[in-house]
Image 1 (tube, helix red, strand yellow):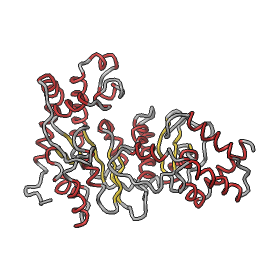
Image 2 (image 1 turned 90 degrees about the horizontal axis):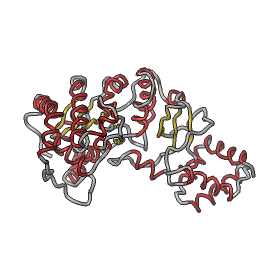
Image 3 (image 1 turned 180 degrees about the horizontal axis):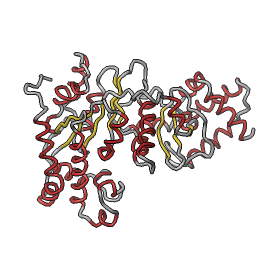
Length: 394
């Protein structure tokens, strides 16, 4: 068999949804290889076991499952029902994968996709297209069908909010899909980024499983920097901004650093800094400046569909404030499911949530007050002006 034979079989599968479904049913290598060889032979393709093994080895050498090296040949279109998972600005190109049948919830989109892409069919049958394939999949005039957006400072209860919203019937919650940030960070004009983002959101927001018609998207913490672009794509979509005492956010980031708390991981220019300055800063100062910048960006756009929600008001605020803001009716069954998990730790759902205050040192408090204290006070004022006077019982 030649490489061309394997590629012809690959193309055959890309055009046949029933073949994709049959291969998708085999998450382990040996059953997959047996079914793949059987189906290939039935359809007249001389695929050998050794060639599939070599393709598997090549995929393993390319690195971890998920978006890998850019392919030299772009497909003209992506198969129907597939999901865009990565954007390469150098092409530009879009990578697609067959993620049908997956349950998206409170864990990062990238974790769900990475786990799925360890399965042989999903791993070997990814495709790259030009961004035009996104446009072909969606209508350029209609806004993406997104129910609500979640912005946050990090370490402020956003995972809990996503877990609760995922309990709603007919609802999918997508947590920080990487393609969104890759488009927002692309070296392109604002108009180009807005266009690419609109196409990507439309593709992400299509129904993921039967019966789902409502999509909520949580963005990365630093995405408030791009609110003008995002609101240009979703001008009418309601959004919430989850926040917390900045000193608690900084203390949490110092204890267990994430991207907003690690100088040099994110482009420091995002926050008005250069790399030498960011690396020379005490970590508490750098993190406080990041939190302050994120909060200031949210404040600048709150009047355009935004709702501030303090961490201290969770989980009750999901029912009392966020659902009404997103115009989502909650049925009794929804409330019951949400109530069952409301007091569980969002990142450790096997244990009860402990709201014990984080230890905040004087240095952390001083840096937080200096760089984010004023923004926090204004967020508190904005929330006080929008909070219902008589919250409903959970």
